[in-house]
Image (cartoon, rainbow over all chains, first blue to last red; front, side):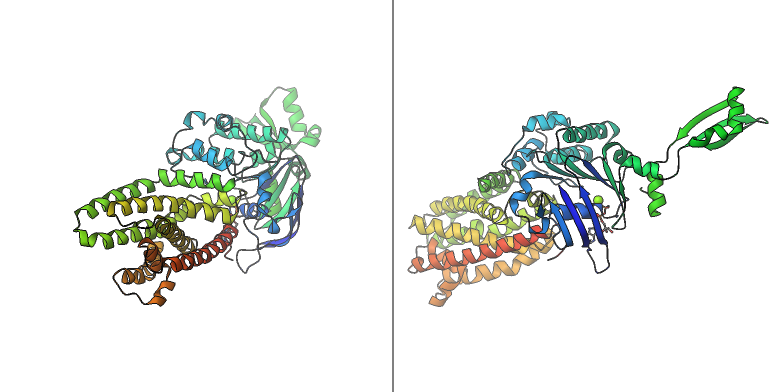
Length: 281
Length: 227
Ligand SMILES: Nc1ncnc2c1ncn2[C@@H]1O[C@H](COP(=O)(O)OP(=O)(O)O)[C@@H](O)[C@H]1O
Ligand SMILES: [Mg+2]
């Protein structure tokens, strides 16, 4: 579906994206995870044809993006990081206009309903909250039922319940066979949604694997527990895969003296810090 | 088909953003003024109004529309849709030309200055398209309304001055090569109207091609790279 070979690009004279390579399979959710300024939106702009001065090969649906014609966009949906809507038109008017530009069209009320905006269909976008605008911006990318979706930070700035709703729609689109590329700086969203995650820092691709493999590749899961000792609470840690060798823990368990116990896997953020030396937020 | 969708969108946009209201206000105001003017001034006043209001204001409105679309990032949404740059330009030109021509005809009727409807409508319609092209050409490289206003001043002077001179009797034949003069000549159904029609069509075509190239380039620069 997407093939990137030896991609090089920079806004300035200094190198930025260098020798980037990756493949996105049809039907998967592929995520770019990285802190702000890492180059996630830049990669997305290259993949969607908004930056054409790159070097190397970028093939989307077997078309070299640099040489796309306008029919390239009949099958691609793009949700930008920032709202790109007519502010003085209502949400329905925006949807009607943008859907009128494509050959294939979806029912607009169904789309509005899916993100809880049907009751605000006749409100002007300028009266919308930030979260409402991002939801509308998101379904605007779906008006022509595209096979390939590019979502730039689809959950950023949403409250938990709307973020949940958005993630459910993304998963629903995947279940319908769509291929989805998304960018995020939220490790939980990346872990939950993505089949493959690419770590991006300073314009470089630092790791690429399934979230599970990334997490398992480094540091084993740990168990931490607390108990009382001489009137003070003490905290201890043991590796999950050698927990049987921890005599203290054995003893505490037999005497029913444990105050608390829990296991913790490393998060994508831990792995990200380890591999790139940078934190996500 | 897609151009028609764009055109409907543009007209709705212009309506919602108050452009139709402005045109209505100006048209009514101008007609009222024409009725109050003494008869011997009426024709020239009407022609100036027709020239500056529907025809030349298009330049300004068109720039404002492009700046709105840039500011609200709608241009990005259009650039990742199947819309071709020439469809975008044609829709923009037509949408403003329709309302400009309607307003001009009303003012023309109010001032009783239309003697040849075909020349009159052609003159205003083509003139509006030409001035809109200049608005597009100026606006695509500009970010703020203030910068745009400054950039339009020399453009408006170059367009209007020879045309006004012609209207008040400064009529060397070579001046008919000027597109603003052509608009006046066509609206007045002057001796050289037939020639003016071709010259104006040529200028309009030339400007439209240039505007199309600018828009194509700006669609490709939306990612932040100046081409
Ligand atoms: N239009 C532009 N011109 C110059 N530099 C830019 C432009 N857009 C982004 N950048 C720079 O490129 C880097 C990557 O930006 P971006 O791709 O937006 O990061 P992300 O989406 O990961 O937050 C940043 O350092 C940013 O300042
Ligand atoms: Mg970004």
